[in-house]
Amino acid sequence: MAYFSKIDVLIDNPDSWIWEYESEILRLLSGFTKQLHIYKDMNLIDAGDILFLLSCNRLLPENILSRHINNIIVHESDLPKGKGWSPLSWQVEAGYNEIPITLFEAAKKVDNGAWYLKDKIILSGYELIDEIREKQLRKTLEMIDYFLKNYPMFPKPQKGDETFYPKRNFKHQELDINATIMDMFNKLRVCDNERYPAHFYINNKKYIFKIYRE
Image 1 (spheres, rainbow, N blue to C red):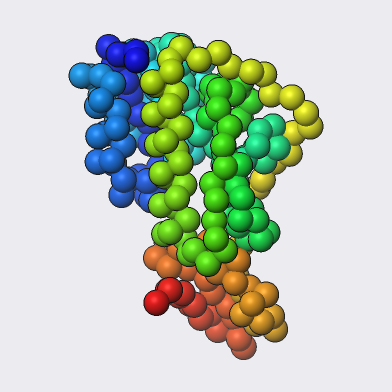
Image 2: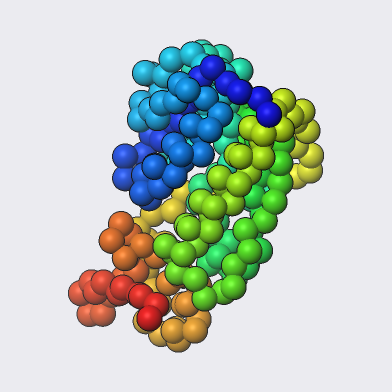
């Protein structure tokens, strides 16, 4: 098993749910290095062996990517299909319970780098957003652990036609008041009750809809 002089993590979204798992991320990576740092700002990143980009909103320019030997992203789609924003949420809303996930090398173009590992997140169809994120995090850490234990791995180029998911916003959580709960259930599953709750309008009045599983 390889041991690294320095491993870094970038999470540039201060409101990301992944901060809730910061201690688990650090616990895993600390088994591979004595120098470990989580950055919130790409411009502060120092040189190191590997940089993991988790929940990042911006592309890294080449001068920052060059500070590490590898810059690794984990993305919930079967690349080159499903590039872009929130691929897991889009797929759950579409009714999929097997979500492909790819560990790949960051590149100058969005989600365009060669890939090292592919796997799947398996859902049962009842999970709400917190449970979905838990499974996403577990699979992400599992793939990172495998990558580090089997380093160096040799990437494969992406092949096939690419597709893109658009960025989600508050409008995507709006409910159709004429639809049934069953019709809207998968949309409700990916709503965050605090960060971006489901909502609907009646008589030009906005109402917030929150969902919990007993």
